[in-house]
Image (cartoon, rainbow, N blue to C red; front, side, top):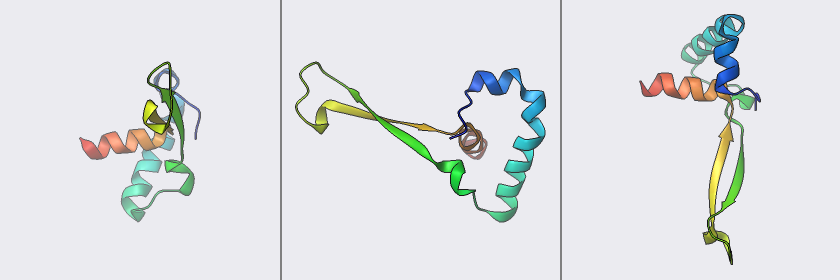
Length: 76
């Protein structure tokens, strides 16, 4: 994970702009991602107070910002 949130990227876009463009162009050119680009963490959020099993948790994932940017570009 890159550890950067959207606000960080917006605030310092002038510093990251060229690197993000290179990342996207390399993805389109080679049709592959670096292994670290799509790594993520999964967290389980409790849905109720008296949890008994896995069904009482909601899984959420945290993925890196570059992967989210690329996914948004592809979706659009």
